[in-house]
Length: 253
Image (cartoon, rainbow, N blue to C red; front, side, top):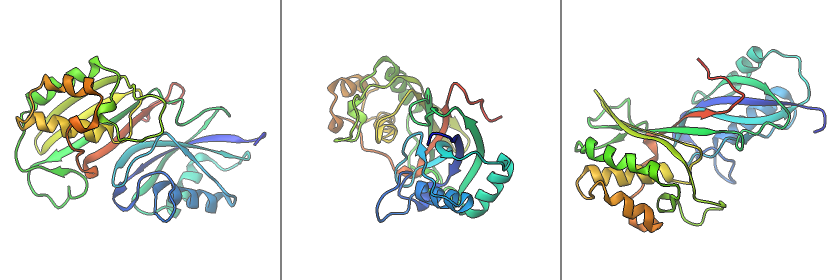
């Protein structure tokens, strides 16, 4: 489109009812539902490009996508209100931001942050929103291993196999477990993430917390570049994409 207005749309969603973000044949996805709502409101076919992809059952408290429009006259507030009325209860539009025509939701992001939530007592309000563990792990040992992650860049050991990426290199800026009254939250921030990377890292750190691995053994796992040496991936229900940072979009305070 030569004459268009590019928009960033900020979303949040509960991933329980969706086969991830990205459009797939014969599956209900967040992106497909968003496309339908946008196309209905603007009365023309709208397709978005997301800041990444989340797997089946993964949630997002912040997710960005971009799409193009002919110049419109409606205010962002009225657009958001009307699109939210067309979306189901588990997907919400938070912001609509005008950006330069070449702005890119995926390639312009400078960092992404995830959280993984764990609880230890049965709680109906945490079902499919957090992972229920029976035994409390050694958080100090898990944090010892987590600090080692920032010393490396090749995370092939935590990547889903046969993914179409040019490199398995990532720069991890934060990896930390925090204990709170009801459970644990793992915080991780990096410039990019590989498919299944966070869930594989959490699963490996849990093995450290259970005493099945020593904290320093994380080095051997990373240096092997072999997925089979790392721990199992934890369930998707506890994973949240929480922040995507762009140099030209102010934080939503």
